[in-house]
Image 1 (cartoon, helix red, strand yellow):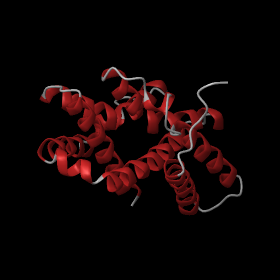
Image 2 (cartoon, helix red, strand yellow):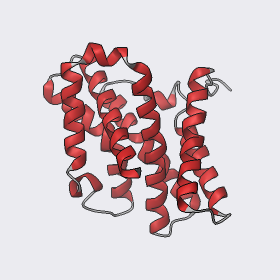
Image 3 (cartoon, rainbow, N blue to C red):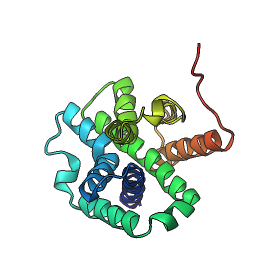
Length: 198
């Protein structure tokens, strides 16, 4: 189930990247590259920083296939996909939770401090979008509008608090994911934003 959610999140991220690239009138190669970096950019940066090479998507071609599917779906059904904003938002939010957990686990597995693990989780979930926005000549969304990275940090804190109670791994993962997903849904629904002026 965890792997399935990982692939669903990857697909959603790839589609969001492809749609933005098409809005920017990029050619087919540009659309594919933006879809690709949106989907795996955060995980790639994380793996390079912790010295895990080859990086994850080079060892598992499922990611390449899923990104390609997202690219093709975006090209063929752009207008229809844009009408399904809620399902895309849900998949994107699931990806946010799953990718955060993957980054946390990567850090834990090599014995890093919890603060660094939380940073890795946030990076895994968010920095594909940061790279996408930079390549599309936009100020990254997570720095100007949405409460996105903050939710990942909150999820990481919840994860380590619950982990201190020696909970079952499945309960730990599920609860952390639900916290991340619930807070993001509420943030969007109630328009929660961090202040832009001090």
